[in-house]
Image (cartoon, protein in one colour):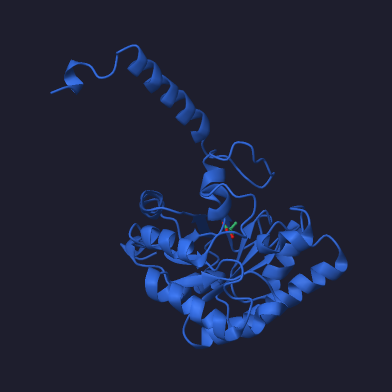
Length: 271
Ligand code: KIV
């Protein structure tokens, strides 16, 4: 890497080039300005304003309720904290599935109003025309295959996808069709590592895995999960890099005790 290049803004092109250079892509989600600024300063390559916002920020049980206005609100806040990372926003459920025209309008609105660098769309064959048209008019698209949470009501379970031969074939076909339609990368969520490896070998754009094993071109996690803020959620693919839930509870309890026992504020903390 050239000196100072770590400060250069990443683009969809530089992310695509990682496929050739074999430099793994590190991605995380963010939903607010402060977290985005911290992630960006830590050298993260991609920040995704995921529609997991619905679960981890709004407290919903699925990603379905989050609206386009809410995605825009959070992406605008995140964007202010990002200097280097590529900023991608999830298009929420029903904002791109109705018609191509509708999808173009909504993706365009997100790009115009937020300063995001790209959008992410879930699905394969069902959204190929949308992906083609949206990229044609200049909006980069990240694909998302495997366990696509917007389809949870069809799947009926958050279990691993792609364990059967027909679905494995479908996922590989979808990845190739998404590539042909113009995506610059593809998220692979909760599929067997061997299948993710096969997909990664079958496409020339980077794959970014979450619960998809070590052979993807990059990895993504939900920030609240990897920092231990979603304490009740324990899928095996999450590595806990911190236990912030415990830390926050302990420190807030300490504060409550200090206030109640009149230990806070002291003389030095007063005017
Ligand atoms: O919404 C989200 O956070 C995502 C990631 C899990 C990839 O789509």
